[in-house]
Image 1 (cartoon, rainbow, N blue to C red):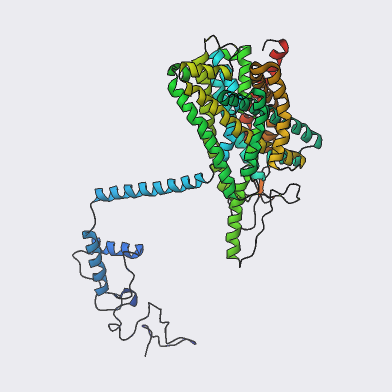
Image 2: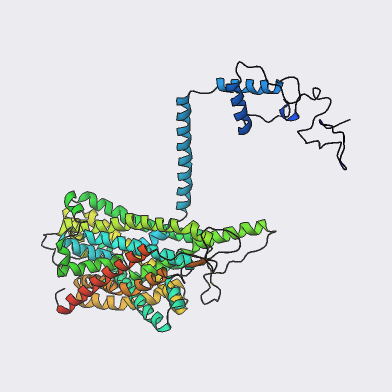
Length: 589
């Protein structure tokens, strides 16, 4: 019969004479005559190698108990269990590696763990690759070719500083676009309609639409010039043929489709960008430019205050920080946020008896319920989106714009054809001075840039019209209307004044974009600095961190340092454009 190891004279009521079978502190008459506790028996004890507390006790006994008599277990006659534990510790100590090898093994383990963490980050980053390339396409369109070629021919490498400054401005403003689109769940156009007076919304729509048409004029002219150079198509016919790229959009782009289809479209645009980069890598390998002078061009100089230099600097600024790209950058981040929330919703549904959780569809224009990303989605996606954008712009966009200016500066500066240099002249010079393939690659890069930038311009136009007017059209139909508007002046210019007129129109369109830029960037800075717009409600599921305020929302507006930097950038853009307009009015520029 079982009985407790301790027997009191008085048994309290309800005392259980039969202990639980899993009670490790109870003993029986058959367990070595009440000697050993079941916890320390060979077949029940905890392995010291897996129990840190037991291991510490064994090591203490090993160090302090050497040369002493074996302690007896409580209430027993011998220390069999303690001897077994100490013997096991001695055996393990005998098999230990030297301290140097142990440190080396620990260092190798930390390296392996670090590599695994880096691998996880890179795999997650790879899921966000794509939107940055689509934004970068807007910064390497034919307008950039015209302004960079003119700047290189006139001032050699001295306006590289403007290229660098414009790319820094573009990265900063596009980061604000990503933040606005991520936190609010709406692009810049939708925020303008939702939070601004109707008259102001319509004024901003006019500026945005004007910027899109000016950009499209540059794409039409650039495509026509490239076709004329490559296959000798007349300029007027080339302007008309440029409308064919609507078929590409019709086949590939599905804004409300699956993420797989959207990523396929992003990869298509990415290959177009890489094609442009490869062409200019070849061009740079064939020219002879002093490396010191090239890097010195990224430093500000007194050349920037000259009237013609200021005119071209504003053209570079407008061609780089394109107004329509701000709408684009704030509108292409939502699919990945929605994908994250959908995955979380499906996981929550599977954990709650398959209850379906519905996320409002952000693609339903005019609907009362808009998709708002969760705090967890914002924290998981926003940083990666900003990093991907910054890498794409600071590598590919900056490289291509710098390469165009460097090639033009090395080939056309102090050359008889430098006066009135355009895309035709740099093609002819590259073909004659380097090799015919160099001029062909330049024209091919121009064609790829015009095609990819035209596609992205269409997407931006769709975002603007749907967001600010609730005017929804198929992308190809939107492209058809926009191209019809932009083709008309291009055909007139091509027929009236030919290649010289097209070059001037191309450069002037980029200056017009620079003038429009302050009007479009002002609401972006305003929205991201206002707490009532940049706040995220903390949902009841407990997902996501952040300190919620009294209203149950997490504030994500710009820090005062960010806001101050944004105001400085906006002020520089305004000052440059005011000076440009004054010089143009005086007839100097």
